[in-house]
Length: 191
Image (cartoon, rainbow, N blue to C red; front, top):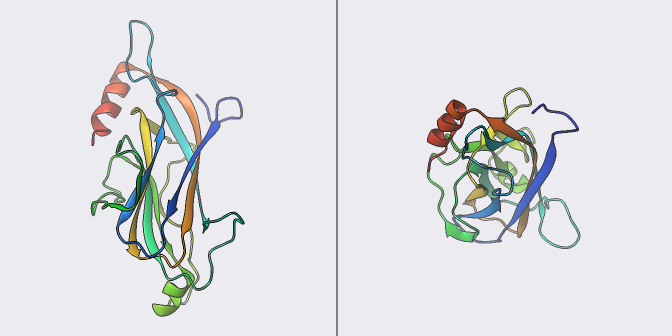
């Protein structure tokens, strides 16, 4: 499939990061309706190509307010293919040191968030609150998911002052895969 209006569609998910809570959490998005990793006879397997990932962060609540300038929290975030942990509230998960590392084959997109007050406390001279992105797919070389889920994961480094809404929107397309490509992707997308 090509990256065009006819083939590309959006998927999204979000999590609420609890205030004053350490560790991390996960929000799982079921992709089983879009993926079939089994080639049958002349029918090829189907994967989900992720071309672009759009991140958003705001204060949690009904009014969609931006992050307050008193926010001192910091967290890492990422989108992991086939992680399959289910939904886990803030404090219920501890992501490994390599979860958001460029060496993780399951990593589709990642970054870090620094609240405005954390930057002042650390004497930052430039404003780089969000997004501070590290890894992203591209329209030329998408990340192709062949597992039945993708997880929005985060790890708190400094507790958030206020409950925070972390959201992600994916630009995706279903793609057919030959057996060799499908086998390679299944091998690399193993937890």
